Structures are given as C-alpha cells and as structure tokens.
Image (tube, rainbow, N blue to C red):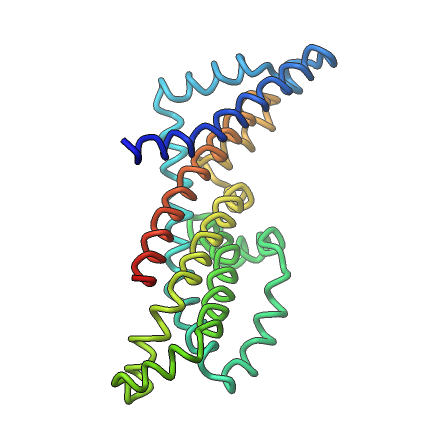
Length: 256
C-alpha cells in the first residue's frame, strides 16, 4: 500500500505539469487565434495521436527510434566505460587522452551529420553514429568522475582487508564505489541520445519519431509535429524513471 501511494505521489507532479501545459496552450490559442497549421488545439493534437495509436503507425515509429537509441547507447557504454575506468586510474593515460576528449566534446552531434552521410551513407549506421556521439561523452566523463571520487579511506580499508593486488582492489572496492556515478552517466547519456534522435533521423529516415516530426513539418501538419514531441517527452520521462529506480537499488546495495 505504501509503494502504491509513493508511486501515485510520483505521478501527480507530471500530471499537474501536463495539465498546466494544456491550459496555457489552449489559452494561447484563445488569445492569439493562430492558424491550425501553425498551432493546433490540444484536442486536435490528441486526436491525431489517437489515430497514430489506433493504426499502429506510432508503435512502428517508437520501435525504430528506441532501437536506434538503445544500439548507440549500448555501443557507447561498451567503449566509454572501459576508457573511463582506465583514464580514472591511470594518470599517464589521462594526460594523453583527456585533451582529445576535451577537443571533441563541445562539437554538437548536429555538426557530425554531413560526415555521417559521407562515411556511412543514408542507412542505419549513420543514424546510430550520430546518437553514439551524443551518448559517448556523458558516460565517459561520469565514469572518470566516479573513479576519482572513490574515498581514499575505502581504498586503504580494502588493502587492509585482503585486496593485495591492484586488480582485486579495483574489482572489489573502486568499481563498486564508482558504479552509482557510472549509472548516472548512463542515465544522462540515454537522455541526450533520446534528445538527439531528431537530428539522427534527419538522415534520410523513413520511420521513427524524428521522421514523424520532420514529415509533419514538410507537409505543414503541426499536429503531427506536436504529437511526436509529446511521445518523445512521455517516453523520456518513463525511461528516466527506470534509470532512477535502478540507481536507487544500486545505491542501496552499495550502502548496505
């Protein structure tokens, strides 16, 4: 009963935020009276969203976008976490690798679109590459931060309690202590990758939420654009909630 009450308390703020957005949205329409091609009513957008659900078209777009983000995010994690662990524990490697990271990190994923087309064509690889760029750096930087933030007292305690090699110390002390911060990086990275899906699906996509929004723009269907935005926002909140739940369990396991 307590868990159900906590879950409801967590949903209420999002419900109220959504309700406030709808009220302001409808109020703006009543005051400005814009063309439906520019700003449709919440009811019209909801109707379009329901049509997309009823026909199954929405699920096709959601699956396409999720599969691209998950593939790029997983690939980024496989590469960035080991690199971050090495960088966080090896100062010589960090002195060489960190300047390279700092040079590439400020470059927006949008800037990589022309190269993605030249290198990978207009297939799935180019889209995954753009999302990979968006997800790689948050994972890497949070992994490095997590390793460096490990309490020296824990390291000394680990050595006293039997971690007599660097590998044992790393596996039993450093990695578990850094894991909550690494999970934060994975969570942030998935969010940035989910936000970058629009840019990725500008590369000649035929399905996906980014394609839905782009197609709506081209045919002057702002209801499609807004429906795609709503789905991206709602799914983003749901996925982030899963990461928060996992993060709480990892933190609880680490503390216990």
